[in-house]
Image 1 (tube, rainbow, N blue to C red):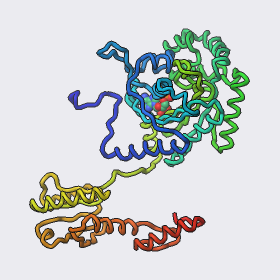
Image 2 (image 1 turned 60 degrees about the vertical axis):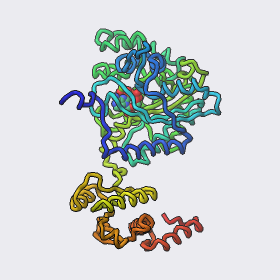
Image 3 (image 1 turned 120 degrees about the vertical axis):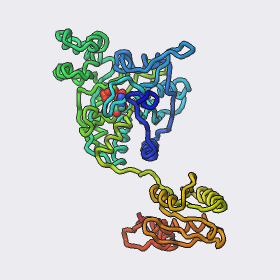
Length: 459
Ligand code: ATP
Ligand code: MG
């Protein structure tokens, strides 16, 4: 295929059949987060390369081999964001948000770019939903952030995910641990993959995150960070576990979780699925108490997580979760003749103003073809305006599902259609107590009755 009609490797189009579903997902992710106090933010898709070098860490896979970095026409080194945290941290510092009352809680959906080997759940352009909470070092916050992640999976009806947690300590206890790791891995130095050879010098903890199967096997016998935690870090980790227990959140302590980015301290966690093959980690996060000061801001404890939306979608599909379908038109208004065409256009505008999605003929189809098209796009109701309808001032509206027809006056068409549509929707509501809801008035009575009597809500 010609190169201009083929998207670059590792990218995905959002097709029209999926756009509303994606919007539904993103809206609910940010809404659920707002119940926990998270406010929506957005930062640029590109930043100064140095932000990621310093913020993500020079010994990480991301910085070493995955960044999309280029020089712009002003000779600045620019990088497309490989993750969301560094940009959010930069925003927090640049806008002096550390002067606001703490904690500050932000959520975002962002595209991310990493030069990786594309495969299922691993793309070069992907999307992350992320949250960041600044200004609380309390272990309660760790548990709250994890409970937000759980609330998201619960809302979407995803089950079977494993929550894995670990503590990777603070710079103080990690120094001792890094030394122990170096001592453990040095005898195998020559057998390590090239990246791990550098990691051994610069940041041996990265060795535990290597995807090379041989290195992975070797890593399983390595010393465990939990045996090296200082008293404060151990206490923090114990409290996080206590709060998770209080919230009935099941977890597994997994000392091999070190996370891919350098800025993490203390608590790290991942939600892992076994229905996604090799790319099983849907959501990963942790505490990064050192990042804000490392980037030039005041000492500010922080914690957050990021979830890959493509992996989340794969998970929804794998578990057969049905979400919002692509919306269909409420009504298709067919027309024959120039006058009818104008009438159709006018009524379509009125209906849209009243909140009904309405389509008319825009390609000059025959009347038969218009009806075929209306059927194909799944219009719930259809009608045809011709010279007879214009003369009589009434039109026959057909409910496509049942074939029933209703005569509506063209004069107050939007109003009459609204009544018809609402009555139709009421017919489809069922009450647990068997109340007949086909009549709008009885339904309204029922709703206000429910408000009066809070003991027995009608839903
Ligand atoms: P992995 O170990 O799978 O490479 P990671 O540790 O690099 O993941 P993070 O940087 O923690 O991933 O990113 C958070 C989440 O973003 C991941 O859990 C995953 O859901 C998603 N993600 C990361 N890289 C990709 C990618 N290349 N394509 C699609 N999703 C990704
Ligand atoms: Mg990665």
